Image (cartoon, rainbow, N blue to C red; front, side):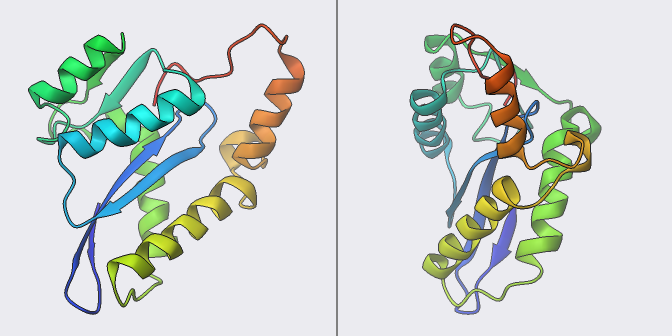
Length: 163
């Protein structure tokens, strides 16, 4: 997603959402986001949460680069690229991006990229920890994950197959 700061700096936001829990795992804010940066964000998430079976994305250049595709192979992740012009194939992330635009980007006027990072991270935490989701029976993503944790045995892996 793109936006701009009051000082003229461009903002590009990489959003990573777990399709099952609806958690926003990360919003990386930069001026541009290339494949190496995507790999860094995803590698950090894999080290924290374990790897999903599938990684769903659009066909942006950062997602179809040889470098990212090789990283996915190395991590044993299957990639699921949506067809161009068919955003409904990535409905969870598209829905999230709409909420992110309406509830954060359109409501804030960032003076610079640093301020944007702080405000966007605060919004991401609010989205995960405070804001109930109708798709999760009006629980927050963190409540939903907590309830899953209580239901699963200690041997079960708590990770969505899709990010």
